[in-house]
Length: 129
Image (cartoon, rainbow, N blue to C red; front, side, top):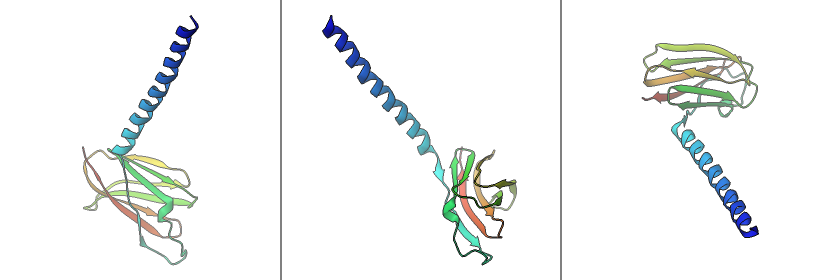
């Protein structure tokens, strides 16, 4: 009886590890669908000599643009526009809070971040179906 009990417990132990691995592998598959959006400084006022592009973290996953900030940049205005110049979304957020923007149509877009000191950062991304 003891050997049978020991076998069942070992089987549960092995299966729990397999289920944890499977759950983690599925989660990584979802993350691979998304792509980071590279951000560059496009206009500097000269007030701040530090490049803050690494603190703005945009990520596109399907039709959802997720933006997070790794430090407090104050009030940041965010504009999402088509490459033709038509504004899709314009909002302002107090950092270090983040936001999500749903983009309904597939196509090429530009996201622009204007900091409270006047510095402008921008990045291009593509939404595909």
